[in-house]
Image (cartoon, rainbow, N blue to C red):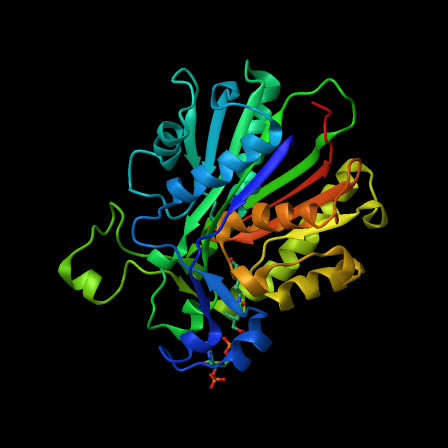
Length: 328
Ligand code: UT7
């Protein structure tokens, strides 16, 4: 990973403001989830726009130009439009070359980890030297703003990473684990709006195009599967949790993160979080947290970092990487 960039919309929606819209309270949201505010994108501010800003910052930090990129993978569960891929819209906005592959990965909250793995494998086996991996979400567009059990949890934003092939041994992505369980898809899903149930006046009136979640079940599975994924990827790489400088978990709920840290017997000082200010931003959550940890000096050259996520699908993933800051 050569550089990382982020973008969050200006508009902050606080718990206090939400409490005037649905039957909730700042106290409930903070104590049950750890969230105090989230960012909300404006009407003309779509995942490709937020992704372009995040990618622009990553390119600038890497000292690269758009034409230096050989591959673009976008992780999103809230694409700008059903088709074409948000990656193609982003390619045009960034002015990337026209001879490169650009496509989306749909793995919800695990999307950034899936996309990073796909890009890294394509770089290893193909002619691609530098890839841009972007997680960008506008969850405010699929949240049911009358459902207090979900609308308080989600937010909008984007993060982008530049991956680059290197001859340096033992740096970058060291090990990875991906998984999915479609038999539990209904625990976190959106029933209508796709080809099985195209939108109708009735479905829109009943808000069937909105996200629905069985929070309790997802919570339990998230803890078990994220802790297990960390342990398995560490074992695969022959690394102990003590050697990991920083764990970057998907930012869904502070209680989930605390439970994962507890199961791994790792202190919360090695689990930086930012969900208090951004809420759950799905595929953007890991790059937003990773960038903040790096910017705050929590991740330094040579450190081992473990990314771990769980989300709709159900999907999950964990990636162990050694942070490497090449001298340009
Ligand atoms: O990104 C993918 C991964 N997503 C997640 O990991 C989310 C996982 N789930 C969660 O984070 C938690 O389950 C929630 C934050 C969604 C809910 O927390 P909980 O402790 O599981 O609460 P609950 O669903 O058991 O609800 C407890 C009570 C209920 O009232 P009764 O039935 O006990 O009277 C709810 O109706 O809290 C009520 N409630 C609320 N009250 C005030 C639910 N939402 C709210 C709300 N404000 N916003």
